[in-house]
Image (cartoon, rainbow, N blue to C red; front, top):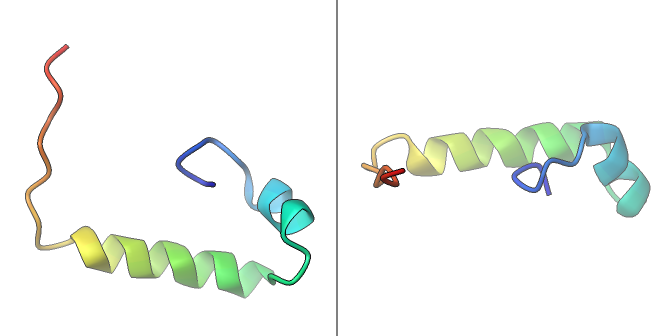
Length: 44
């Protein structure tokens, strides 16, 4: 949802079972998951 441009507030409104800390933890998890990987850069 963040990658699609949604704000934290929009995510929380769309997913009422989540709390702000859940969104932050998901972002931390995603950052750690890609920390040691090389990601291809799209030519443009």
